[in-house]
Amino acid sequence: MRHVFHLCSLLLLLAGCGLTSTVDEIPLNEAELGGGVLDAVNALVPDGNPMEFEEIIADDDGKIAIAIAPDLWRITTSGVGVEIEPLPGGGADVETVFKIEAICVGLCDKQDWSDYMYNDEFSPFVVGGDVMVLRDEPRTDREGRTLVAERADGGRRILASLWNDDATHFYLCEVLLEPADVALTDAFTAACEGAVPLWLGRP
Image 1 (cartoon, one colour):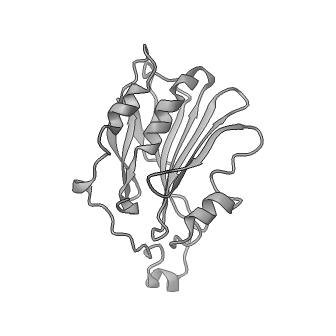
Image 2: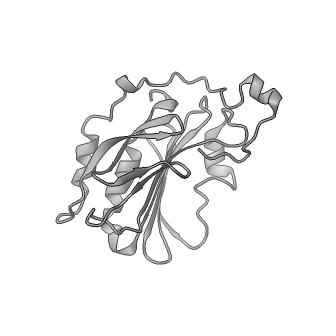
């Protein structure tokens, strides 16, 4: 979990710092991926690539998402967010970065996330001038945004986010693909978009 300001005063802690979400979270036993989503992601994997995506539970410090990740990749939570790391023979370069996060800003209060995502200089979608944006569009199913950019080395950067203004955290999925793996861009983009963050409630 990322915080811009990591500490709250004692007064704020007593008042429930970081606990101001008013979202009716989805119970884990009622959460599921949309119908056909996983099959659609796997259909985007290029012929001849051994990668197969599966449903996983990504738990970022108590913020849980039903997510989609390549089968048999290593899931770690020792750093920031949930990292899904490729293994040799897993269908992608071992330098691939795949991360899922529940992110808050400031004192982790609910806020106008759309304004933050599109207008704030610290938005994750401020990608810098060293990339060429190939796709940048809002989600059509709920509040969110997807961006795909070509890096200077020819690789890809994928960002997919979902949010709810009544929630204290937004969902962010980020993938950095090496140049040799750009054919996997559509599959990873769909995987990032297909997740169901339980803390955001139902669409």
